[in-house]
Image (cartoon, rainbow, N blue to C red; front, side, top):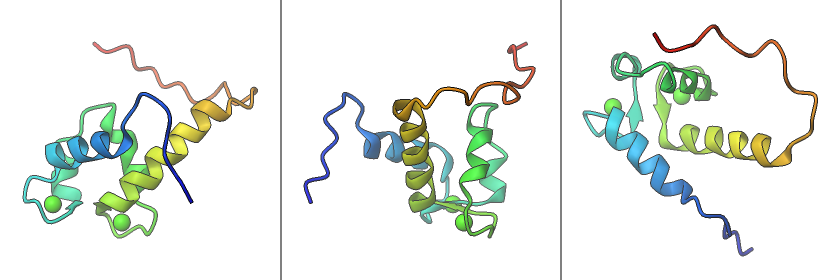
Length: 90
Ligand SMILES: [Ca+2]
Ligand SMILES: [Ca+2]
C-alpha cells in the first residue's frame, strides 16, 4: 500500500518534535512526570493514552494525530458544540 500523504504536513516530523520536546529522558514515551510539561494545548494529548497505562508512546501519539487529521479533513459537519473550553489564553 502506498500510504503517502500528499499534504503539506509531515506527520512523522510533528511526532518527532513532540516526542523530542516532551520525552525528556528519551525512553520513547511521555510518562506522567513528563506530561507535567504539557501546555494547555498539549494537555489534550493525554487522551492519546489508549491503553491507559499513563504513558503516551510514540505510537499512541501517532494514532492520536491520525484521528485528529481524519476528523479535520473528514469534515462531517455537526460535530461542534460542547467541546470548547473557556480557553482564552490569559
Ligand atoms: Ca520518557
Ligand atoms: Ca499508553
